Length: 156
Image 1 (cartoon, rainbow, N blue to C red):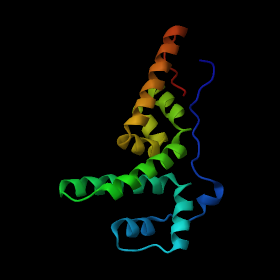
Image 2: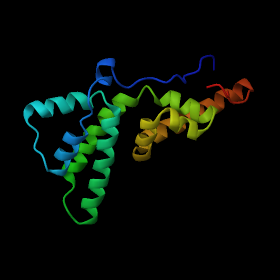
Image 3: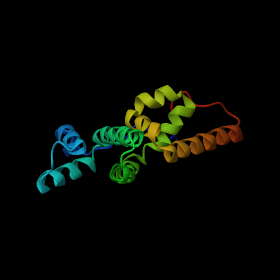
């Protein structure tokens, strides 16, 4: 393997960095305490399309809400649909971080990968598809190292 993947990447634009998170709007909407106007909904959607922090917050809330509803015998289809939509968005946002995370986790330590890529680590807790992708990349990296006859890089 000639080139390392492990470079930290940003998941938001510089304009987004100056923007306030939409936690209150998201939680109010998700809990049913606050109906969003069309303008608020547009703002939340634009923010969510760029902000992995809010995507992770919303994902954790939706997973917990679905579990709660299921445990109490209530309909969870609306929550599941929102979670599926959010997963697609999160995959689009995080897909470039997966190879770097896998390389850091394989070459150094999984805890180091979790520290360098905290939002991806949080997503991996909920997403078997992405965990499988990380496992596949790590296996490929081990095979490449073995073929080259060398040990893992400690500078990834």
